[in-house]
Image (cartoon, rainbow, N blue to C red):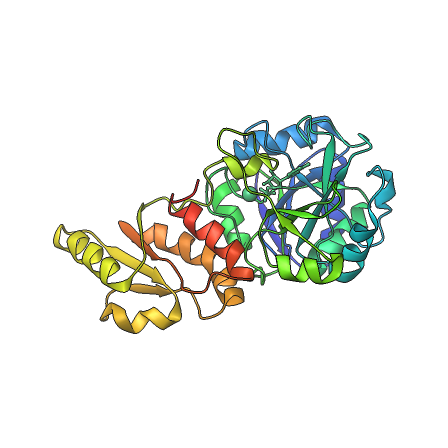
Length: 330
Ligand code: AMP
Ligand code: MG
């Protein structure tokens, strides 16, 4: 199969629609990362996503719909706070988990009684979803455990020859996956941090919890149990520029090609060593992280990450991805 990357062109959406209706899998741009989408009503198409990614069979998928899609077809009621959150943040990088009506394929939620729904704001995603007018089950368009894709080229690198079409909407400006919010309880609870922060949710819903898995407990969001976002080179993680410099010099002495990934404020403390600038704000770090991890794995023998100082707001989600990429929390 030849994989085509198509940016806005005459007939691009009708081609995508045809593939989706035939039970194929199509990759598409969103404002967070690229998604690997299939018709959520079609068992075989949904199973194809798991097979293509090598995704564990107990890691459920998020269903994507356009902004006017009637979600009451898919969910069994919602608390008042959830309606307020939808009004405040959708379309946007917030996934909401609801009790499911069980109408979509059983493989979407991997047997859970809930369904995760997202309304992406990317114009490419919106136009695609409107054209198909179906709920589209879509995880990130990367091989399982690899770094999430933030350009069409990243998707191509993982799936060339395996999917027919990538809808290219340019680079993803959000850069990390959506916030996943459990909306089945009295108070919303964050299962995965992202660009819609706890503070933003609490300002609308009045309160917002953050799920922390207890030792030995099955996680509420099964994806959080897996190793994720890993670059394909050796990695090391540290807390200071001094530590990073020492690791760097050790690798260089052995003839390796080390590289340090650090926030903007630390770059001058690296003494001219090969470095990737993660950025100065949480939003910037979210936007740059995956592209930098993907470029580092192509050239570095050892990638050394330095923990950023800021830990609040958007950084909660960024740190989660960063630490997991470096195998610190996994
Ligand atoms: P991905 O699409 O690869 O970014 O992963 C989707 C994330 O959403 C994973 O962490 C899943 O575990 C989570 N997720 C999807 N559906 C549900 C659900 N019904 N309940 C809880 N978490 C979910
Ligand atoms: Mg993913």
